[in-house]
Image (cartoon, rainbow, N blue to C red):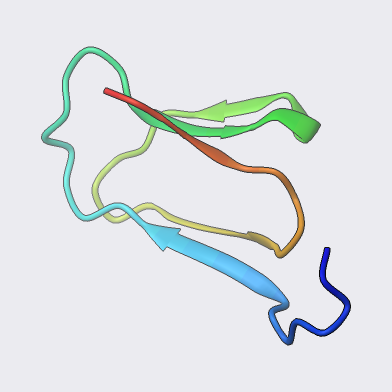
Length: 55
């Protein structure tokens, strides 16, 4: 993590549920996979590993 960064948190909001056959968010350090719904808001600390699971 860059010590000069002023970022503290990261956020993401899902606007729709129009995906089929997959998709979601993965937080490997917490061994957590989330299947989003429209309106879900995810907030996590900057520097934690997170990734999007492709559709």
